[in-house]
Image (cartoon, rainbow, N blue to C red; front, side, top):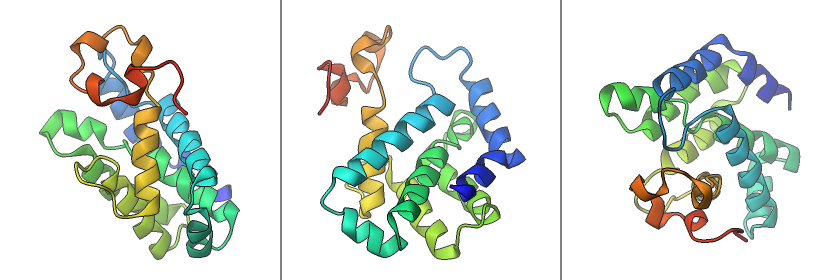
Length: 172
């Protein structure tokens, strides 16, 4: 996954991660760090592999390896703009999609791939149902990546009731 390595090595990508870390250094609720990004990437990829739409994604991307790159790119960028939400109140999903666009192009993703990834990033937080297959899986993985059941701040969290992981030990 050469393009993923390139994405992760971009100084601007690292800068956005650092901004998230700085804004969340004293946060008691879920944080949006490297571990969360990786968890979401792995879960999204598992959901794709187990999903009915896997063949559709492979057809769109060209190969399973390219699907994996699209999944990882989306997950590794889906919360990049969280710091901006803390500063301005803007929706971090929309901000993250804007920030990701330039990064993805710099990492040699095509304009078409970049649009698909950015749409999924925008959709991962929408109240209504996502429209793209990647958006559907990214949104689900983002929720499954949280270990709400074991969180010290669960009683104070406004999202706790909607999270599958708050009510069971294993989610299958």
